[in-house]
Length: 333
Image 1 (cartoon, rainbow, N blue to C red):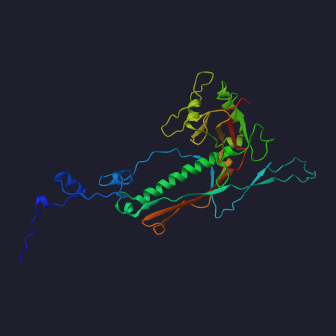
Image 2 (image 1 turned 135 degrees about the horizontal axis):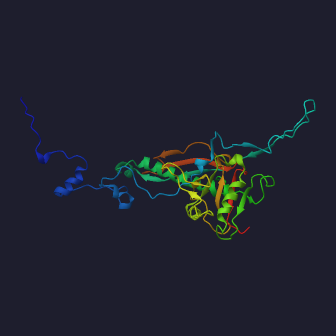
Image 3 (image 1 turned 180 degrees about the horizontal axis):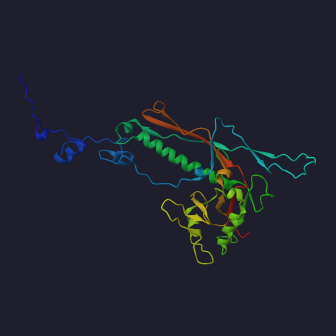
């Protein structure tokens, strides 16, 4: 039988995209709407039936950049140790035929980075996973990774060392120089003012830089939060020129006294007794030891009809070389 293929009528033409919603707008036809949990819009209903961007927006939080400037090692177990020598290997001079007495040996110190396990265990209903207009699992994994980065960054700066890394600001501090200070104690310089940077702030910054020995200054940087950097940015030298010179090229970092500046929101604001500014070689000075990357376990069985996403990450950290980091303390002395 001869069958003639005729084009479909205009009214029967297949709609592309969000056809159901378009039909509701045009004809008033019944539209089946589903929410992520079937209750309120902010629980998922906003995503149906709207066409949304493939990338979900979020309120940005400050992520600490300490991981990017510290020394990071991947370990196979929780019992990581690192040996550090102090004092070097002494040497001596002798004539051609003179005896060579035995020289002293280096002093070894053992570094054990305190560690802890970051975890998150959010749950999502199966209906949300089925009906959402975006990849909920991928989005949730990204959210967990961002939160982990924020939490560990805060610990690298001020962590107590109890079930978490020990931040460099949690180390004991002293005004003693490198030769007299106990191992593991950071040296600080007082601003001369009990509540601010003081009148001689520009001179204090120069002193802070020179407190760090020359070998450490290769690769050193300043670390402070945005509020502290705003105060430093206003400082001028005796000729009225700003100490913090902007970069000439778009991809060139602005330099403070010739060294790059790293903005870390976990650093404290300028205030009484606050260690508001750090300067040092963090590759030499701070050690991060992580056992593995973030692991996420998908569990659809324990709490039906919800799917749990159990994420864990084990990470530790501590000061490895206390001579490599110097602090500026808001104090009279």
